[in-house]
Length: 255
Image 1 (cartoon, rainbow, N blue to C red):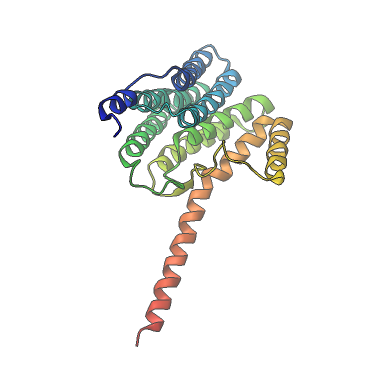
Image 2 (spheres, rainbow, N blue to C red; image 1 turned 60 degrees about the vertical axis):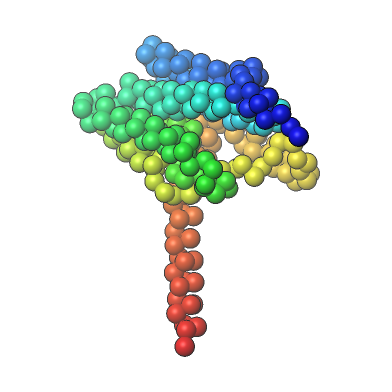
C-alpha cells in the first residue's frame, strides 16, 4: 500500500525544472513592462511571445517528469497574471491607449480584469470542464493578440492614420478582455502529447508551420492568433446550430 503521507509531501514539494520555466515566463513579462517604459515596443511584444513559450513548457515538463505540485500551479497563475494580464495591457496603454485619456486606461483595465477573472475561473473549474476546450479565450492567446498587433504595427510601420490605429488598439483590447470571460469554447491542444509518436506528415506539418512563421513573424503570428481568437465563436455557433437541429429532429419524431 503506498505511503499517503509521502505522496502528499511530494505533491506539495517545490521542483526546480518546471518552476524554472515559470520563472522565465515571469521574467519575460516583467521585461516587456520595462521595455515598454523605455519605448522599445517591438522588444516588449517579443518578450510576451517568449513568455507564452515558457508558459507552454512548464506544465508539459511537469507532466513529463511527474513533478506536478500545488506550489507550481499557484506560482504559474501568479506569473500568468503578470505576463498575460498586466504586461500586455501596460504595453498597449503606453504604446497607443494613453492618447485616449480615461478611455484608454479603462480599456487596459478591462483587459487586466478579464485576465484575472479568466485565470480564477480556470483554477476553480479545472476539474469539471472539458479538457479539449478552454472556457473563454485563454490569457496567453489574448496577450498574443495584443502583442502581435503592437509588433505588426511597429515592425511594418503601418501606413494608417494615427487616430484609426489608436481606436483599433482600443477595440482589440476590449475584445480580448471580454472574450477571456466569455463562454466561447477554444481548442486547448491538451490532447497533443509530446511523448507520443506522430506520423511523418505530422512532423512535416510542424516544419512547414515553423517555416511559415519564421518568414515574417509579426504578420503570421498575429494572423494565426486572430484566427484562433475568432475560432471559439465559430465553435459556439456550430454547437448552437447543431443543438437546434437535434431539437427540431426530436420534435419531428414525436407522435
